[in-house]
Length: 255
Image 1: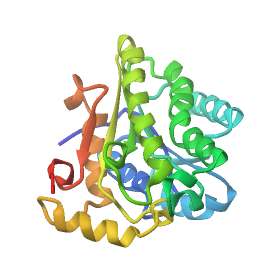
Image 2: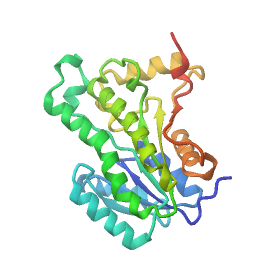
Image 3: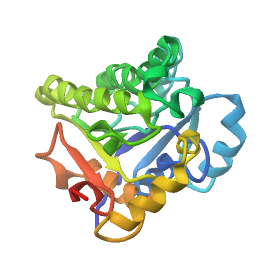
Image 4: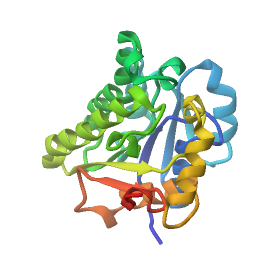
């Protein structure tokens, strides 16, 4: 039994009950962590707050991770409320829908900029803001996908973003190790989240994944949450800069 009592976790990326961030939040809450759960904007506030209310003791905060001022304001509020934090979960990714269909060569300059800014740079930005509050060290984690390594039809510019994200994990891990802060990524199999629904032919991807994975099924949010719980705990105290696959084994298959 993992016990996170007395630990504070900041979780970015809650949109709705299908969000990977929600699966992670539930597992961290079950283990006793105090949660600060962040959603993007007013449009997402109502659904997010209804979910957060299901986790006694958790608090909701609004923050658009593409806005440095909002990040600064958020962590000032978190520092005032909690004093310090131990866990940071970055479950944020976005590319314009038109970039996730058709040919990769048609990727627009602006679509590329947005995908890399929101999906990659935001990890650097929130980590930089969080580190001064991680005075006892801690764990930072993000979410990636196998398309960072192999071509997945329609994933397009988001695959480039995930490759950049995985490299960012390694650089942050090297940078923050002296402060006893670990940085890792979970490479989850495809899940029908709000963000994933923008990917063309998502249904085909889910079907193919379930057929080829050794466990012959798809992963769910709570299984990703279990992996996040491990990375948040002292059981992973010597693990940093790594990509942890939670994909029913799909990544090991050649064909």
